[in-house]
Amino acid sequence: MGFSKDFMWGGAAAAHQIEGAYNEDGKGLNIWDVHTSLEGVVRYSEDAKVACDHYHRYKDDIKLFKEMGLKYYRFSISWARVLPNGVGQVNEKGLKFYSDLVDELLANGIEPIITLFHWDYPYELYCKGHWLNPDSPLWFEEYTKVVVDALSDRVKIWMTINEPQCIIGCGHWKGTHAPFQQLPMRDLVRMSHNIMLSHGRAVKYIREHAKQKCKVSFVPIAPVHIPENDSREAIEQAKADSFTLKHKGFFSICWWCDPILKGKYPEEAYELLGEDMITPSKEDMELISQPLDFITCNIYYSESFRIPNQYSSNAFQGVSRNSLGWVVDEKVMYWSAKFMYERYGLPYIIGENGFAGRDWVDLDGKIVDGNRIDYIRRYVKELMRAADEGVPVLGYLYWSVMDNFEWAEGYDERFGLIHVDYKTQARTIKESGRWFKKLIESNGEIVK
Ligand code: IFM
Image (tube, rainbow, N blue to C red; front, side, top):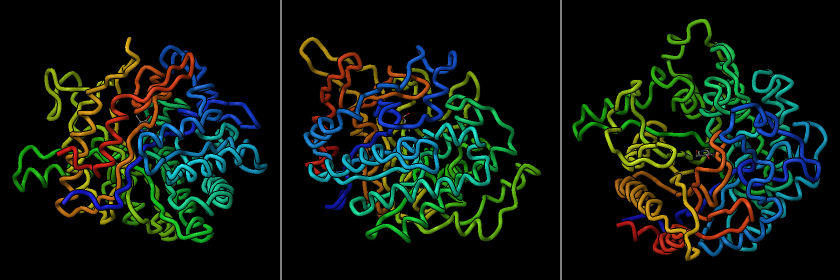
């Protein structure tokens, strides 16, 4: 069977990780611009002031995307580039950058997919209480309006928020991402709720005001547990473990996906969070659960119960890992598609999937990244298995189109199909990028 003829093959990236030009043409600062300079928060104190300089080089980059045969490109908008203070005065130059980017993509036959928010929160709004401020959903709606009014004549696919799990989990709970906070549960619950309200307001705005009929989605991470064996009991157990708050808290799938896709918080939230939990109004839940067209999931590894200093069900001595230490476990593609479809009933797209390595250009000028090719092959094969078994799998977007700033890990961890030399800004398509073209041309058949 395989994938449908109109399968969405593409790549993804995010504004802060590639654009650079952090203070040019009227851009405001975001929390990463400001907090990256704190002592010891980013490996080697690296920053994204220049990153891949995509802001100035986007035309050349798009040529390379075309050379790799990409049909779709998912990118995010820097909120502070279009609204330097987060709300109020619009920065026309910033908006023009995205308008030109969209035009350039379309001129090269590549369909743009916009992510409204991929972690680079405007610093000015952070100072006003960020997601904790009850007005924050209104700020997000104002921002959405600016972008949608300017680009929806040409952009047909919109993602509201990328990996809300990491916004709260890494940024405000564990303190490993900007703004490097560790806030109390009570605050984290309210911030999560405001993020979901922001998502709802954005969906509503897009549906009501976009200049053409659009598809709308959001982007959770959805690494599920893999059944221990093929028995019905093991599958049910893996499913139950995948959709509980008990082990992963704000990183769990159901904390976000149940309200957004089912219109209610998981029952266990009330029990586990006690007085820290909110009592949401019916109106709030209706707003949060605006119908979506599909669910866009980011998948890298499978989930497991982590016992400190011990191996878990999906990790063992010598297991294959990427350079970040993430276990390579392609079965997660199949089970995530299956479980997510069964629970939420929406068509499924991979919004991100990719392999981090320490690639370099060899003496012959090539980047021979066989591990990445094999990784993609394994994962796509499992995705195809889910499609063959009836899950409506609509697309696969590789993370990332090019090497970039990997947040607190800096520049060492290279996910790209295109190698970036940060000293010269030279780009080289990796072997994986060339293979990805063949993958697209075969509509995935070469993975078999
Ligand atoms: O680089 C990140 C991206 O910004 C969000 N998803 C995971 C990627 C790899 O860590």
